[in-house]
Image (cartoon, rainbow, N blue to C red; front, side, top):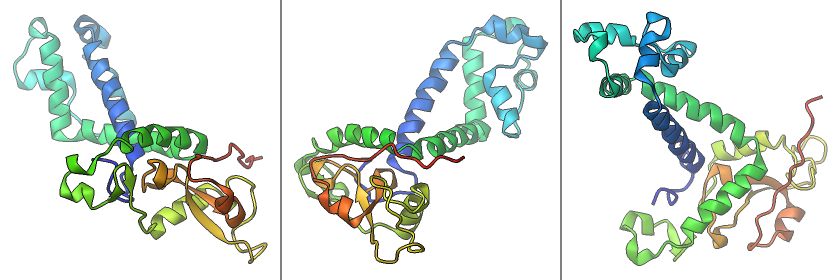
Length: 232
């Protein structure tokens, strides 16, 4: 089960974005019109060539690839385009492009706690259906019972990521938790969707809360806020 391992750096959200980007990517390939590609500035380029150039990822152009294989324009069809795209992926540049897209989208999405809360409510609906009898031993080791993952130590890199994302303030009441203004305020790293309710041990399921807000938050509720400090 992809959601069972605690705190992978390539998070559950990375996997979700990778899935969506992959779907769009393959749909884009299916929608490519061969005649349009071959007529485009007589260079035989399409969107991924522009994207690869934008990210300074060296790759062989479609024309160069055709020339190496002695394929004429008249012989180019959809299967030829797919073969070229597969070659781009297998040789590395297209895989790097997709990973770059995943990281850029993750950067934006990780800043939006309300999106993360809704995303993890969706994930929890999958986790809650997990039955230990149907899981591998390695997956079972991460579960406390059917549909409930064990609590896991939150690594320092995850604490730092959430602390700085939330600007050192409680995500609900905005109490300062930096220890600079008031040393008495204790910071808690809270699972937005509780483990008891199908939540997962993932950096994208964490938020920074003060002790009061964390202790008053029920396990059956997923709560965050859309309070964000204005940049100006």
